[in-house]
Amino acid sequence: MNHCISWAKRLSVLLMVIMLTLSWLAPAAYALTDEQKFLAEVWRVVDRAYVDDTFNNQNWWLIRQKALKQPLADREQAYTAAQQMLAGLGDPFTRLLKPDQYRSLQTNTSGELTGVGLQIALDKDGKIRVISPIAGSPADHAGIQPADAILGIDGTPTSGLGLDEAAERMRGPAGSRVRLMVERDGSEAMELDVVRDRIALNPVIADLRTQANPAGGPPLSVGYIRLSQFNANATMEVAHAIHRLESQGAEAYVLDLRNNPGGLLQAGIEVARLWLDSGTIVYTVNRQGVLGSFEATGQAITDDPLVVLVNQGTASASEILAGALKDNNRATIVGERTFGKGLIQSLFDLSDGAGIAVTVAKYETPNHNDINRLGIAPDITVALDPISLNQVGTDADNQYRAAVEQLVNYSTVAAGAA
Image (cartoon, rainbow, N blue to C red; front, top):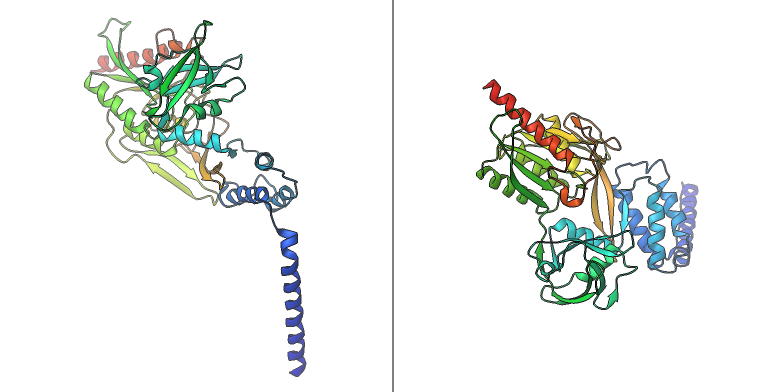
């Protein structure tokens, strides 16, 4: 008995010595710099949330250890190291967003911004070019027009600026001023003093068209709705558009989801509910393999015939909507195979104002089709003839014409059956 107690005391003393030694060594061996702490923060978010618990068949802890051994002189190097770490997942949708990129993404999905109200793009010469001013925005009131080039923002040349940085410089508190150097059609640049304001981002364009019936029957009133993204205003604006078009006498609809990159998952689900009385909208599968679903829960606004236009730029929440309408036999899908993004991301704040988008689940259409990297095949395939931006959704748009033809044929058949 005494022998056992003696060994127990010795073991206790030995463990105490080891612990004291480790505690003395720990600060020197394991103290992390701010950049390393940031890298560890990114690693920890992915470790807890990423959909694939094999992390693309990698030892995720070992990835962390290797990453922390890199010399990181500043935050930019930490961002680069984090991006390299995430690249090993083989998932382009799990990505680091630097603070300006993160703010821009949050603005786009929030449905509201304070700024001048310009949609911008980089042209082939690297100039910041206006796609269009938002109707009623400060930029619109200032007379800025589509195709104008923004050469300077508050005295800073835009040459070399990315879109996110240029957009960030034009945003600011409502009531504050920004001076824009604007060039039009190669003429001499002019300076415009623009007062920023709060702007609601409406992702919907909608109007009623009267389409002739080539079979000689009565013309068809078609409601055209183009949805450019699923931001926080998408459901409300689509609902308003349907109600307005119904009151104007719409008998059928074209829902244009071409080049809609997606956005908020919940917005995609809620827009589907506007068209469906019942049925599954989408299934989700998390990292534990647990299957969840979202259902249509009430009466649709309309049961009029519906054609959905899609193309290779139709992605994510747009594919959820198109898949729900197709699998529930609510709509005919016309156009080209969609992008094929069957993954769901969540956004996580990081301590320095950056963010990280992490794939947290997969989704399946109501018929349990996994469309990731495969896309949704249209019911009627129509390749798009070359057109300009202002010809989209007009008679010059052959995909739109095919959608209308489908609705007219449906109307003719229905009238014949009656």
